[in-house]
Length: 120
Image (cartoon, rainbow, N blue to C red; front, side):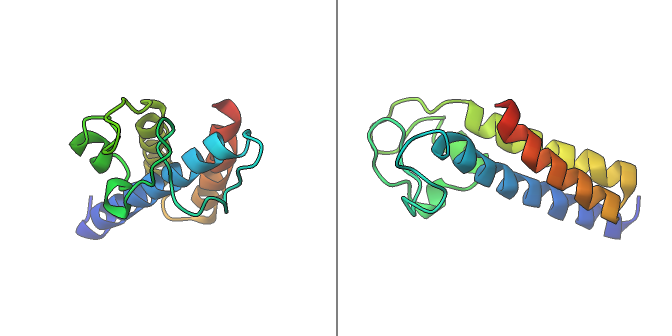
């Protein structure tokens, strides 16, 4: 594997984590009345409703650093958040390894981004 492929794989994995984080927003806000992906603008703790600081909203890393708990109320945050992020990133990476950086890979990523919220 070339250096270019390794760098591309890392970028795709990180992009998958970010998309997984957005999918979590869709999963948890769309089914709730009064919430949308646009409002509230910031992420909130599901328990105490305090705003999640931007540096506490980094996919996977923040969850691990905070030991899966809210910084404000210290109540455990559901593991579904990192599971969705890691699953999305891993599938994006597998699609890259299977198809390379092609239109088929992008189509696969779009389908995954559609099906994960439906499945959860």
